[in-house]
Each structure stands twice: as structure tokens, then as C-alpha cells.
Amino acid sequence: MRANTAGLNGHVRRPNVTILIANLPAERDRRVIRECLSLEDNGYDVTVIAPRGEKGLRVLPGSRNTRLKPYPIPVYGSGLLSFAVEFAWSFLCIAVRLLGEICRGRAQAVQVCNPPDVYWPLALLLRALGRPWVFDHHDLCPEIYATRSEGRPNPLVYRTLVALEWLTLRTATAVVATNESFRANALRRGVAPGKVTVVRNGPASREIAPGPDPVESEDAVHHIVYLGVLGKQDHVAGVVNSAAELARLRGRGGWRVTIAGDGETLTELRELADTLGVADLIEFPGWLDGPQVDALLQSATVAIQPDLPTEMNQLSTMAKTVEYVSRGVPVVAVDLVETRRTAGEAAVYVPTGDPVEIAAAVDALLSDPQRRAAMRRTALARFAEELSWEHQSVAYAAMWGRVLPHRQPVSALVSAAASGTVSVPAGPEPSPTVEPVRR
Image (cartoon, rainbow, N blue to C red):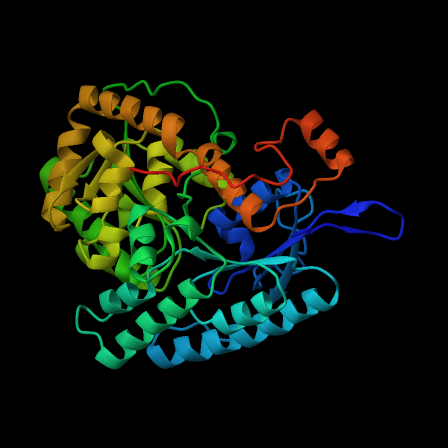
């Protein structure tokens, strides 16, 4: 398949990949931002259709020329009915904008990111037109629903979500899985192994400002951090409750907590901190951009991953944990399958996520600088050798070389080489023998 086309002036146009997102503005989805930059580096033009974030934003911040085609979201879901309305509206907006891209001669290939798993009809249309459709599997929607239902999901709704996931996986030209558990899930749904590529979440090395190893003084204030979405299924209340327990164990001096992020439980968390009498010990700075995230984690002594041992969490790689590890921050986490595969010995694991367990583990780490130093070295080594986006982008670019082979314009190659941004050789990939990243 020859994806590139010639313009009127005889120059070869770069093939266009259109990325679809329904649950976040593009400029707030760090995984998608990294994917866009990797696509640009490897000779593709990129368009992102996503909910509107910052007004007037038409080019993805930090990119060379990734075009944004935002659409408004009049209502955000919090219950089953409002979620259905939100995603029905998103489907309509995405479909209209995608058809516009096709009519303008773009969208030679499409990548869709879930949730939700409802875009398979568009996959059938694109594949009927002979264009690749890639599914970037961010979340296990049936398991999320079961978790939010506190283990008592409606059987009909759950089976419907499983069916939608099956349709989404089976109609894709290729599937990008965020870890080995997601890959195994795709194989159980009948996807051929050769169609699934593992591309983990994680920052690029260039996103992390270099800094000296931390030096502690006796009067240093320890900084305990949670970074991520503040949703019901994220159990961030466990961090607030742990702060109250930690105040009982250590007193109220010499430490503080930052809960950075945004989501539906933010107001509840603030009220809980007031109720427990720890509002003065916890800061809620809201959603942070990339440099702010880096600055926060560079100052952290310990980070917390409080996600409970549900089926969804056992199978999911928490983006926050990779962010913690990439800065060498020791982690206190609930003992989950994919969390161990991510953090290894850079984390202390607690069995259930009870606030007493978390507080005890944090207290022990704050009192043991030698152990924290060893965990920091382990974390930085894991990031450099396996977890960084530089490693993940190789598999991601190779996947696109298989589904949308192209010849990159010579001018683009020269420009990219001069700037040092070429991360994967351009040009059609032979049937690669690159295996998905394995744990």
C-alpha cells in the first residue's frame, strides 16, 4: 500500500494519521502527546480530534504542526445515563469531523483511543475505504464499570460493555496495548498475536529536568505526593485518610502531602481533609502541565499509588507510577500485578490499600534514608533501561511502519536528521520481527 501522494507542485505529501479521543482534551493526554511527537519524528502529519480544552488552541503544544480539531462537550458524565449522553454526543462530533478530514484528503489512517468502546462502526467504514484503523487500548471499560459499581455491576450492562470491547478489538487493523495484561486480554478476545503491540505509558527522558541526587538535612520537610486523576475508582480518599493516620504516627511536623490532579471527587477530598483535621497538611494544586509535574516529582520524598486490588487495577499500568519511577521517587503502592511489573523493587507494597497500611509504609520509608536511596537507584535504572518513552516509541513507530508504510520526503529526513529527532528509520518496514515489549 502506497500511502503518500503528490501535490500540485510535485512534492510528496506526508501521510496523515488522525487520532480520536473522547475523554480528554488532547493537550491533557500525555500519552497521546508523546504518540503525536513520535509520529511527527517518523514522517507523518497528525490531526487530533478531541474534546475542546483551551479555547482557541489549534496546534498541539510542543509539536511541530499537529493539528487540533476540537469539539465542545456540553455535559460530562457522572452516572450511567449522563455518560451515555456524553459519549453519544462525542461519537456524533467525532464522526462528523472525521468525515470532514477524509473529504479533505487527510486521515490516511486513524488511531482511536478509548474509553468508550463505541467507535467500531467508524472502523468498518475506514477499513471499507482501505484505510488502517488502529485501536490504542487505554482502559478496560468492563472492568472500570464493575469497579465503579462496587463489585455489583448490572449483568446486562456488563455484557454489553464486553461485547463493545470485543467489536472494538476485532474491527481494528492493529491494537496497541499498554501492558502485557492488556495484550493477553486482546488475545482472549480473538485478536491475532501479530496484530497486538505493547507500548507502555511513560515520560520521555527529555521531559525530565536533570538534577542532583537529593541531600537531606535533619530539619528537611518530607514531601509525599499523589499525582493523577481524582476519580471514584482511584481511591484517592485513601491518601487523605493515610495523612490523618500518619499525623498520629509521626506528629504534624516535618512532612506535607500534595494531591495533584483533577476529577469528580476533588470537592469530596477537600471536605474529607477538613473533616479529618488535616487540611493544613494537604495541598490540592489541581491539574499540572508537564513541567509542573516534573518540578513536583523532583521535590518528592515518597509517592503513593492507592489504587485498590480490583480486577481492573490488577491488569492496569498506572501512568502515575511510571511518572514516579522515572524521577527515582520511592513508591508506596497496593500490591498489583502490573504495578510490580512497572516498579519492581522501587516500591514498597501493601496488601489491601487500607490507610493504616499505607501510613505505616510511608512512615517506615521516611525514617529510612538508606532504603530510599537504594529504591531511587533501582527506579532510575528501570526507567533508563526499559520504561522511558524512547524505548516505547520504537515499538510504536514500528507498528505504524507495518500498517501504513510510506516513503518519507527527503527534505523531511534531512530536517529531522539535522535536528536530531529521528528516532526510528523512515521508509517501509519489512515484515518486522520486533516482538512486543515483554515482562
